[in-house]
Amino acid sequence: MIYNLFKEIFKDNERILMNWGSFEVSTFCYKSGIQALRVKNSKGEIVILPFQGMQIWEAKFFGRSIKMNAMLKEPVQSLDYLTSFGAFFVHCGFTRMGVPGKKDSHILHGELHHAPMDSASLSVGEDERGKYIAVSGNYRYTIAFSYDCTETPAVKLYEDESKVVVSLNVQNHKNTPMEYMYMAHSNFCYIPNSKFIYSAIATKENVHVRTSIPDHMSASTENIEFANVLGENPEKHHVLEDGLPYDPEIVMDIDYLVDGDGFAHSMLVHPNNNAWYLKHRTDQFDHCIRWLCNTPDQQSIGLALPATAGVEGYYTENAKGNIKILAANSNAYFEVEAGMLLPDETKEIIKIIDEIIKKNYFFPV
Figure 1 (tube, rainbow, N blue to C red):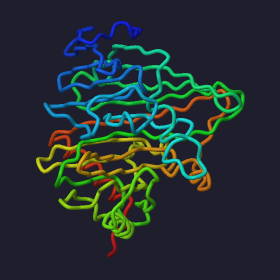
Figure 2: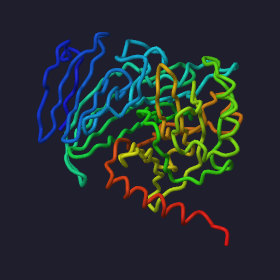
Figure 3: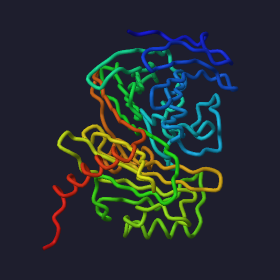
Figure 4: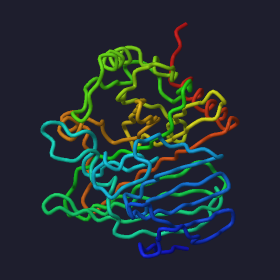
């Protein structure tokens, strides 16, 4: 069953929109006037911005927030990536993505992250995983002689799960092909002394650390030197030890291995064996970025940011052959699953990752 959402039903005070099973859905507006939809299940809640990029602004499970600590505590009305930065999940792209270089004219991370949705809807349903509530929207992006596509992001939350399924479908309406770049950007909370466990072999051939500094940032000598160290020995980032210079950031592009179903797996395992978790398909995303930030003002773990290109902006990525083409009158679909695991679930994913590594790594005799 599908219910259309209209901006008029969102008021300053929070109001319950529906109850279904253990779900509760309510509407409210932030001080900026941005409409927000709170969806609660038996494990926690997420807050979706149905008319601003279909962002997941907040995600809480088992009594704690799993999103980054940001300078901005509430979203604001903006089309600029950095002036309303702080969501748990944003879509980056779709026509351009990454940090614009000197030749680039596109904005940071493209048009979709703060796109004003033309329409939004809520649906309820049930499948083999259980009951779910899904929120989706449509945004038609048209620039004469260049682009005409409908971008449809969606968020699905199951009744008894502490993970969300986030998807994007893009339909090219043109009778000619169009270029695209896309990244699924999640921002997890920084947990000191946690450990990265993921389905890749951590060598410099498989983990490519960025050493350039974006124009909108400045970096210390320690940060630059640390990036160079990680470039040769990427495993040195595996434990979030105190004092490591992730200010302003460390960025790497990881070549992932997959399980028998085509999924790559990433975890940040906490000292208590809970974990942040994300899985993605490498046939949809042939790149995966890890972004680490720990400054006095904001802290974030971009555990795994599945992408169709690197993050150096259009001209640089085009020179590398990383720009994808969407055929005329065709569509592209992307999906990731992200959230929190309890210790027993963490153990199960570690087993899966161990099996992937064993099948793909030849240990010397």
